Image 1 (cartoon, rainbow over the protein chains, first blue to last red):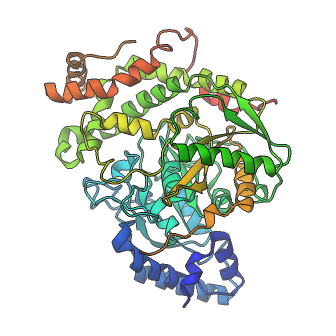
Image 2 (tube, each protein chain N blue to C red):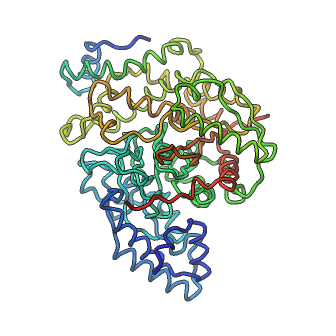
Image 3 (cartoon, rainbow over the protein chains, first blue to last red):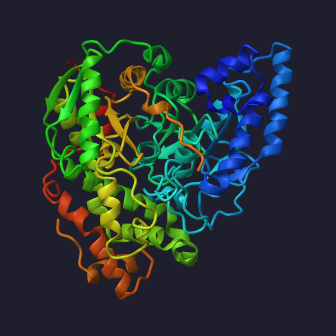
Length: 470
Length: 65
């Protein structure tokens, strides 16, 4: 067995298994070996299902020996954020309330990956009910950043970011309601795709905010994200909000040249109050894209603070409505910060919520008009690299909401507008912490942001950096 | 649209069926207040006929560069 197998990309390992250069069993053992080594330090997994994974891997190998290939992920071991329902499995949603919840259905996203041949390594840690941007969890402990275990992973897909970065799983599903895929991608140095609202079915995924929730992957490259998106995208009769927009050829898009593509750089907001190392990484990323043939264009975006505020109003009300029964019956079973944030939704009158919902169309139209001259917009994911676990452990203190708002101020406008965004590793601080940029596309045009992300990754190796065991 | 006071937060929460004490109401008011401030320039300005689902129409429209 070689541990190096776990270091391969999803695309490469799937091909190697399909062509019988390696067995699913060998690959699964390599992942389990790394999980055993890293889990005590990272706390990335909620549950490790070693025996079942090895059994499934043997079955995958036996099927392949009979030339029965189930699909593009045949025999590839994966683990996902513990909020995707799978019939018969405990799905905690990172909470004490659902500690023993057994799912009675399987989410469409998981089913599509399973139908493509993926096997299950276990489930990944997350912020309680996906409502936290740092990676803290008062019930199961914080997830640690593999590049520095004193630092946060970002959330809410904390286990997904940590496990993909440490090469414990080839990829992982996350979810993004206010930045929950892009934040861990930025802090942990992996590639994360927040999809267009409606692009991937949300059926069987724990809800937080029905107007903002999106499903998407965290992986080691844009190419790997494209492969997963291609398998999961498309209308689902089980989810009435899933879109009938045609599904693109995302994998082919990652091989495309970006010569002549126009990349917009916001003149304000996303370039204000940046940590100097994040600012430097943005400048250097722009230079690389220019070198690859993209045209760089300054764009004047509408006031993003209003979008952030509208996002907060919508999210707070919808989350509070989902949780109302438990807020009445079991408030003591929430962590203090999640309880505080759920209670925030109680203070917003129905008229204010509906105004924020009614403004969504005009706000998106204004964004489309402002960016009509460019193909993608580039911004940092967050103004700072990963803070320490200690300094960001703000609980329900008076300043907690301000800390959360500062971390998520570049991601929330995109959720409100429902746009796709790809977070790509774009550098490291002097102390070795990853920095990510987000490439924001047009609605349902994941293909273009994946093309730009892949071109950037062909020219750089930030995404290939593997954290070292201490 | 102005941010709600702690007293108003308590009244709204109680009406929603979740009773909060004065301290929690005060914390909520401080926590959510900036969102009201941020949205204030938009609140009360939207045209009468604006349908919330217009978002989906804009989302599905083809962009002409």
